[in-house]
Length: 197
Length: 180
Image (cartoon, rainbow over all chains, first blue to last red; front, side, top):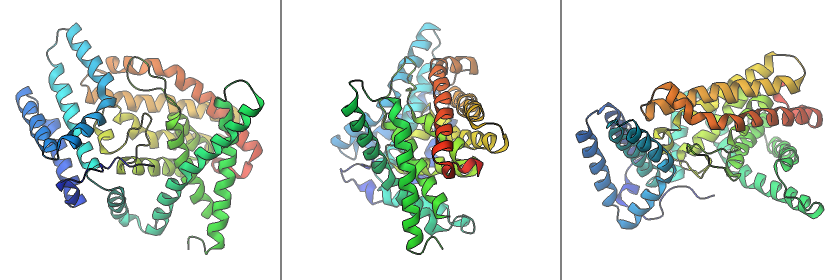
């Protein structure tokens, strides 16, 4: 499973994760407080300049990360053209800038560094959520995802061997049952190795 | 204890895998995916607390930068996008769904369908619509229009979640942590 971290190394990759997250927090709060189109445009250009300093390849990748916003951009633009309300531009500017800024932090931070931040944030919960348990849960989830996909593929193959129809939602239940059995076996294996205690 | 942990991790992975099921895109851009089925199942099978924990685990990994949300989305940008309300609503929806299944001691099939409907459709869409209204600066009626086409899919998913939960109750009764 590939993380969204950009393989193109930039100077921002070397900044401390906590600093990047704090700056992002501040930037987003300011962004949502800004009302005038001029100041929002200024904020958008500042961010665009920041992204551009990481090189053209990186900038292209950041642009691609904004693709899920396209339907919303089209709908809001259409809405404001039909209602003849000029208020659409600031809304879109704010939304695109906020998402692009957050993506910038995601793209310049390694997954392991982000997980370290999550673990640090969860440290006050120590009595109810021991750090070791959290780390194990994260690792198990990352491991179970491809396992589940393999189980579903195996059952889909079995389905195709017997039926000319395409395997649809019907393989969901047997895949889930197989995965539950996998989870039980993983639990037994953990217990056999000393458990969570 | 170990079993609870592995089952929570498994359902977190299940939400991720259901997000990979090819999506059908309708006009308003919120993709119809099987992902919210995973949220419903977390509640109906794992129960309130563990279901919400599984969803939070999934969200932690998504926000940390794994592209696990439907359409390969992930990272911190998710929280600033118009669909942020749905993401924030995920754990709440799973918790409420689980609470209904835990406390309403009627046959599992109708209870699970109604719980998935109330948590995964009514509550989740309410929070999602509030989020869209805020980010896109529209009023609630306008934002609801964006969610409307997806309610049929959500209705089908509620029923499917009910039947899967019933099947798990029959075939793997020990796995139904919401009723144990």
